[in-house]
Length: 226
Image (tube, rainbow, N blue to C red; front, side, top):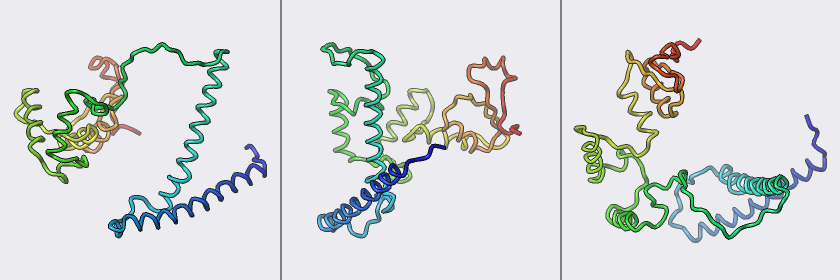
């Protein structure tokens, strides 16, 4: 165990204390300004608890920004040391395809086809909180989409969920039950794992790419766990 020098510990505690007191004063005046400028919001419960909200905004996020900046500096220095040459920008650029942007249908950028339709839909149906249809209701768009999906896959009907995690974790317990058997890939997504466990049925897991059914001896059943 490394002993921390008293001066380091003292200055650290002093910094935390000073930051805490200073930001408490800032929040006090912030509450007064918010109360004065948004009196119609009085009586609403806060999203987060006072101390939790204060810690995240005033302490955690600041420390996180400092650490991220420090890591970036250390990374740049390490790359410069490894290359033994200073890093400089060039006039050359390469086009690339970003497959991890989470940019569904290109809505995060202006698109000549999608953007006008998205704006038209927002004006007609208004923005949504993306809650479930149990809370937000079913619109004609839901019925039209489900009919389109059913026709595409050649089935009499289809149901659309707002997110993939819920699809797997909720539907599996409905389709399966006690007395059934689920054979699951070891690398299946956590939503499938939770859905299978929530079904109450027998779940057997096989090693990914094990060549089943030839490698059926590699199946492991969770209920057989010692």
